[in-house]
Amino acid sequence: MEVKIAAQQKILDYFNKILANNVVFHAYFFYGNEGVGKKTLARFLAKSILCIGVNKPCGVCNSCRKFSNSTHPDYVELGDELGVKQSFSIKEARGMLEQAFFMANDGEYKIFLLKDVDTLLPSAANSLLKLIESPPDNVVFLLTANNKHKALPTIVSRCIQIFVGQASRLECEVYFKSLSLNGSSKDIINLSQGSIGKLIFYANTEEGKLIFNISEKLKLAYINNNEFLFLYTLQRVEKDVVLVLKILDCLLAQFLLLLECNINKHNSLKDTNISKFCSVLNNILNAIKALKSMGNVAICISKLCCDIFG
Image (cartoon, rainbow, N blue to C red; front, side, top):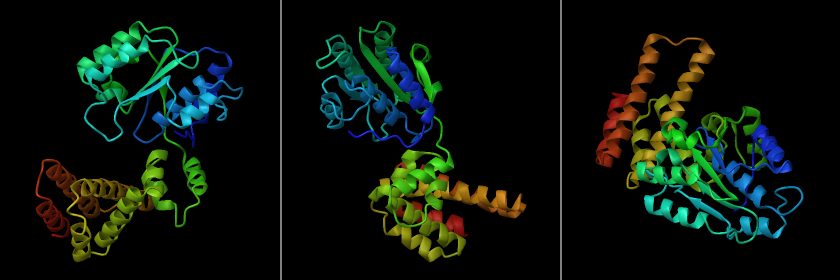
């Protein structure tokens, strides 16, 4: 896997310091909002620790090439990228416990990236705790979590904690330009809200661009009071429930930004306008909740239109 960092220079400076002094700790806990780059930074640190070149990660040594090709025998990732309810199972945790006590194959360290540990079931979390409490020599655990407070406190306390904050607007603009994309970056940068992950998703993936474009159409349909266009746009994708949910999530974020923009621009909104915005936000939230409860998509879409346009 190729590891590219778009922001977070202070964290990179910290990595350089610990690598230069050869003081690698046995566990690091990366936490922060979704899409800010926790997993990317963890992978960058893993690649750097495993690198046998001079400037880590050099990108050209045998270890770096294996890492980039996802074939490094001393690097393991656990956890799903698809937003499932739990990061990994008790069975996987016990399997990791066995692997951790084997010697590294290629170099000095064996590294485990454990994603979304704030979603672990208690049984898996307790197995992980036992391993982190008494870690094998030359094993490094890299943990990530969106919500630090939902992770097992005894796990967090045994790690060096690294908060990964949002990228600045300037960093987002610079990164967007580096993608060499056509079109305006303003709306996508606003929507990403400092999340490089979200920026990449909406600007540089087919699914993300589709979701963003449809949510933009829906937003404009609402602004222009065009109920027919709003309904027609959603009906075209109603067979894909997951896609509809992602579109509504994006639309919700669009409306929140619209409300914030109007308040900042005019200092205050009339009570009627605030009430109207809040009502629309509640309508979208109710539609999302209904769809997640296995509601009929066509009925949910029709009801959303009726609620929003009256």
